[in-house]
Amino acid sequence: MRLAFLYCGEYAPYSKWFGSAFTKLPIDEKIKHTIRDAVAATHIAQREDNIAEAQKLMADLHNASGLTEFVDVRIEAYYERNIKVIFADRIADAVMKKIAGVPCEH
Figure 1 (cartoon, rainbow, N blue to C red):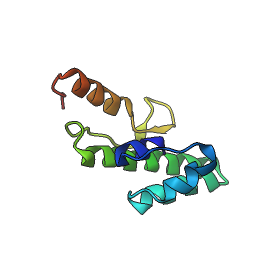
Figure 2 (cartoon, one colour):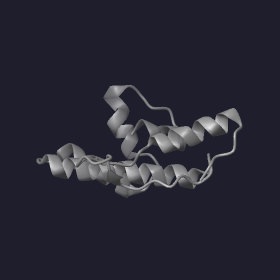
Figure 3 (cartoon, one colour):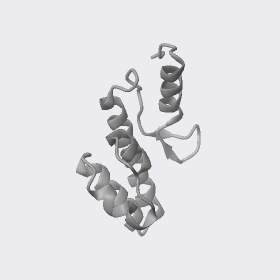
Figure 4 (cartoon, rainbow, N blue to C red):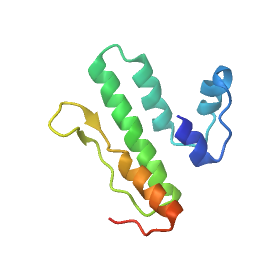
């Protein structure tokens, strides 16, 4: 959720107003819904699915921002474990390379 504020160039207020301000950000409503569904999930599998989907949607937002070259991010298993991730370190690496002025690898 904090990344959404950064991508929108908006100040993230303190916790009392954070959720309300997040709902007003000009981002895809699907991101907001998947985060809301993750928080409201009653089963761990539902929560994991929604968190992974929200992370993927945020990665798509990153790619649409043009801050770095396109980063191929998809929901996949965490090595051989039954845990869903997007390996967001790929985005962090692309940002670090951009800051350092090093071209991103594909």
